[in-house]
Image (tube, rainbow, N blue to C red; front, side, top):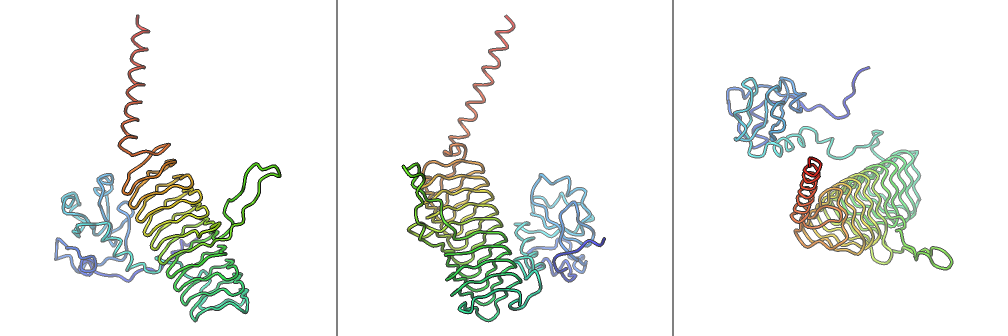
Length: 355
């Protein structure tokens, strides 16, 4: 069975052109006409590929690579085998990504899975919905009453857009995604199987009649240039809105509770759980599986290491980690102290056993 390629192959180009496009320097200018047909990792590259090296962890792969050329920083330049053309860049990975974005522009955002260039005859669209020219709606998508969708947006197969939802231009709503009670800006990328705008988890617990549900009457506001990973859920607010700030990037399987406000240009890795009524500032980075308790404030520029549990406010630019999370320097000192206690106790027990 032939192995398919899911993205377009870039046209062949020369090393001289690659160096110019990456704002890099081809160390041996005589190799300027050498042809490169694609990009690859060091351990998989062949003579027609460009790779990059920027981490000593992969020094063995660099030594054994069969790549035709390699982007590398000046400090590692001498490590490149003689048969590999050296393309010098101060930030090799950034230069590599810059090239990849040009050579594989079709991989930057999802395309129509079915090659649709308009509205599929198998989609269901309420007559009151307003879709600008250039909207793509794939088979089995359902668009409700009074929905507004901007030009250039793709609504994936099986997606459901609830009444009165507004989606801006050049967005992508992934297959099987469900959106309700939401206002979404421009250039928002929502991967498949997300759930946005459903009830928040709001109850008065353990009352005489059982758990009493609190009406959730807020909205979800997603600003421009946000990306939301597959399987992520974002609850609508109870009284005030749940807000995702401009440029924020959310990984797969993240849970965002009601009334959460996330600032601009934040990074949320996979499987994070954010309880309700949190306030997260701008440029915050949260590692995978971080859990944050409700009604906390995470200051601008803060970072939290993966698998941490946060029960306290974190100040701006704080570096916190652990369970429960605390400033990382304090956390590391405590780990070292505990290890020392265990080591000393083990040594004491051995000495006592020899008497």
